[in-house]
Length: 229
Image (cartoon, rainbow, N blue to C red):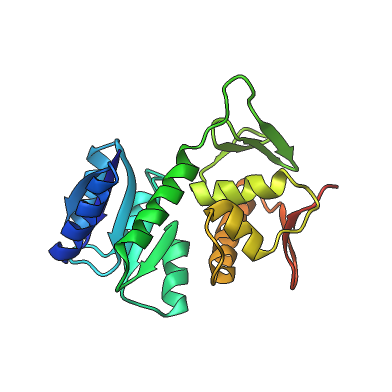
């Protein structure tokens, strides 16, 4: 399984490549944003990107914005910035996760495994699982979401995970911590803002595709739910 590592600090690229090799992955090494985008366009076997935000030629934010026009491959941002708004901008741009520098390589490996496990998870072909919620048809087997008119909504693995979790438990309210632990498959630490950003992005996509249908409801002070009518 190929994983792209993009950072202008060659020592970081080499360090992460060693850890990826030890875990059985094949690292693809690049050192600027433009090279990262070129690599993902030319190699459809890349399953995940570890991407520095501050890079020459094209920064990580621009890379992800361009990437999301052609691919939903998961992205983990590396960032030296610790401000919450910088992290939120990264998630809104289309990243799946972020790690702040300096980092523990073992933490990144854990996040890589968690994201890949989600994106590769498929139920048995004999028992396809399709949910119909309001204007949406959600196919867990193919990870495809469409409107009842047949318009496909392009979602990241995390966005799909959130939608499917809520849709499969209609009227139940899930807290941000519960969503984080179930979808990210990690223990919740400071997850509320991360979940909020992904839910907001998911809502925007649904609103655009359905012409304004509000599928996901916020229960203030508690969490989120999909309400049956």
